[in-house]
Image (cartoon, rainbow, N blue to C red; front, side):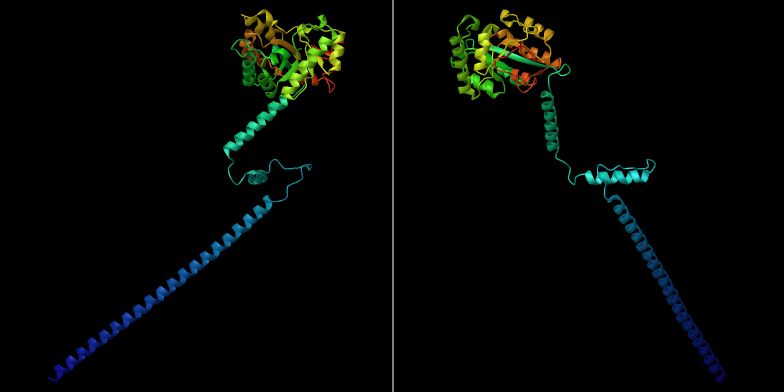
Length: 354
């Protein structure tokens, strides 16, 4: 029995020792894992720190490079009168320069398309106005259209009013040699419109009397009376007169000089004698387009329906040939500041007839 009890005790002791060793191994393994985890954590932390330092260094380098680039692109530009020398093979320098120019000239906000269109229209208009003011020349010819005997009405047909509509639509200036008797017939509004729309209003006598067939007093009265009518309505005293049928003599010249009026007849080469064509406008058109030349003063009549009928085609044809349109005074002013000269006789863009 004692032997058996001793054996049992030995077995118990063996089991206890084994359990103790197993427990010790478990504790050792746990410590080993903790150490491994700690080492891995330290390695990971070291890697993160190293990565952060590297990123910071790269960011610093990038910032330095950007600063240097900005400093390079914002250097002071040379004055306009300085010579800029640049190596054409330096592509990098070209790119920096292009970038700088784009940065400096590009607005912060996109421009308004309507404002851009308006600016372009204004520039075009300014260009057109500059061209219209250029002196008459063979390269840029000018013609002066003139209309006699108005303001004209034929029954219910407001002839001069219709002509003014055509000229306004075509943006053409002309000169109207008016009769005082026609103004006094209740056509003051038409005369005022003629002046207000930029046309020149000139004197063609009061009653269309032939000046070379009447006396001095009648000539003076005819011109003075019509001058006063025009000035009272438009506020502008005429500078030009055209004697009926173009007839003048020394007396007519002297009275015109006294009244501060230049005598303006016409260029016979391009004048179509429209008074001979009341029912057939085509010869009027063909004659003007065939014979018109720089500086010509063309005689027409706003009393003639055929003339009004053909005017749109005449203006279009002259424009196609490169002609610009001026009033007579505008045309003659390009001779020099003294023209048109009172008492002098003009038939085209040239010094007056002696």
